[in-house]
Image (tube, rainbow, N blue to C red):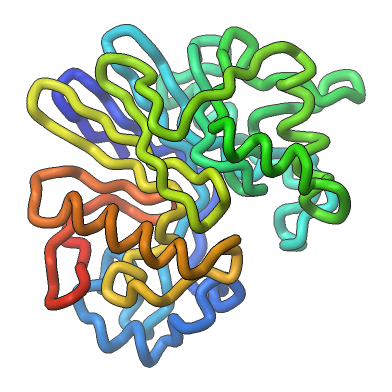
Length: 280
């Protein structure tokens, strides 16, 4: 799936797609509640009220750069809290190459935040060592996000993720730490959207009068546009995440901006009473 925004091309590269099995992340999104929002069907949910979601990267190609936004789960990783995310062996890099984005062609890897399903392909295993997957790329992390996890990834899954998917690219000298509102190129800038994680950032793309918004995990699913108070179980600050959704979706509602989530397909945000919906 690809979209054009002015002179920028955005391509979705899928690692995993799921239907249902999302109660662990959005417990309030019961099938009964989802069926009360018919605008979600069929693109974002099934008729039975099961959520359609994916784990994917977004390749953003500008006239001067090739950027990968978020890098999914990765192969061969251990210590993940979700059993299916351990010891994966998928053709993700082959899929990316077939889409026209071989790893060696990427100039920048941008992580909206440093959670397990957004940093996994930062590295790959080579001769028993985790090395940068994208050999020519600079890896861009938000400074606030990195500083938090550098001091809070002391045990469990957080330590495993930091040790195999974050620390190796830092040690390789490939990382640039930036402000959460940094401008990365003429077309690409960041918007601070903390709440899901302490330094979470969304990505704004502007080119030739057209705009796109890559929301990361401000919302895991469009149902959270209708129910702003449905915070994810993975949110570090659920109250702050509600406000981030309110502000971000309010800013871009009823505009032509193409909105692409970290785990859902694109659409355009429309106001719907005191909340919002996503229209395809």
